[in-house]
Amino acid sequence: MTEFTMDDLMFRPGLMKGQRILITGGGTGLGKVMAEACLMLGADVYIWGRRGNVIEDAAKELMDAHGGKCVGMACDIRVPEAIHDAMDEIWSGGALTGLVNNAAGNFISRTEDLSPRGFDAIANIVFRGSFFVTLDAGKRWLAEGKPASVVSILTTWVWHGGPFTVPSAMSKAGLNVMTQSLAVEWGNRGVRFNAIAPGPFPTEGMSARLNPGGSGRPEGPADPMIPLGRNGEMRELANLAVYLLHPLSAYVNGQTIAIDGGSHLAGGGGFARLASWGDKEWEEARNAIRATNEKDRAQRTV
Ligand code: HXC
Ligand code: NAP
Image (tube, helix red, strand yellow):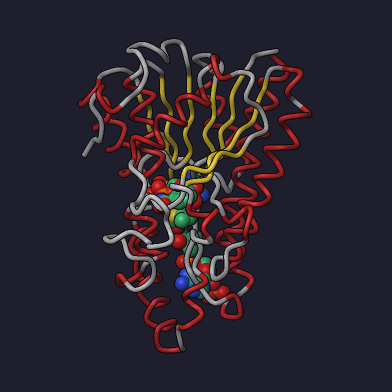
């Protein structure tokens, strides 16, 4: 299902014409709605994910609804060689003008229950994978002297920590520092870096792993700690992403912008409340999350 009509976007038709945007994890959730907004505004859009059917169906669905060019590519960002090959394919039609580091893995867990492989399962996607994608595109932009905008999708945990989601919080914090560092290092060559820290925007991927069995963070009624009293709307996030990707926001560099209804300022946005869970609740959560992981893994084509 697609999300938007032009009434959901705050920009003029054709705004993104000539832009070439790669969105990792663009076949589902937040990545898909950012892809939709860019496509509707005239950009050529490339979306990556490991489940070939999911990514191809998403590209087709978006083009059927809005026209334009959206290319779904099966690519695992944990594999630098796969990134390089997929990037070669994109670059054969011209340089990207923008990259959205959106792909991620996450699940709630007591940190003492994590194995090294459990930590790696998240850090290899979020921390290492996002850097590998950025590096591969970055080298090409610098070599060709081409300007570009990189937007990384983080969380507000980069400022206040993420109890029960420690590998994710650590990895996103690393990307926050990447954003600040490369904004300075590559800014004078036209490649700028910003980030978005969303509050809760309920998606299937997020709910299954952070709210397994409906027990963690409620998807229905919003967290009472959110000052605006509601979850985020997809169009709110998509408009912010388009702004940061467009050349007219060029003087914004090195910033991480929260879009969370003010939640992190009011002490919300994390899972501290799960401290009240005992062994039984954690076992149920773990089983539910693993069932989702297995289902998704069975669909992977790379
Ligand atoms: C403890 C767990 C676990 C759990 C998995 N593991 N689930 N440990 N509690 N609930 C451990 C496994 O036991 C195993 O370690 C290791 O992790 C690897 O598990 P696999 O299932 O083999 O991993 P893999 O197939 O690589 O899958 C990666 C994944 C999966 C990250 C675990 O969830 C995934 O692919 N996710 C992609 C989509 C996603 O997560 N989207 C949510 C984004 S939402 P052992 O040692 O046992 O072998 C988000 C929101 C943030 O980020 C902000 C909200 C406000
Ligand atoms: P989602 O639908 O599960 O999105 C994650 C996407 O990443 C999936 O499409 C997944 O597809 C892809 N992916 C995972 N590992 C990959 C890999 N190794 N290579 C390529 N693609 C990979 O969850 P979401 O809620 O939309 O989350 C999107 C982003 O927003 C994430 O960065 C998340 O941390 C962030 N975020 C979300 C929220 C929220 O409330 N939803 C809040 C704060 C931040 P495959 O499994 O097919 O590869």
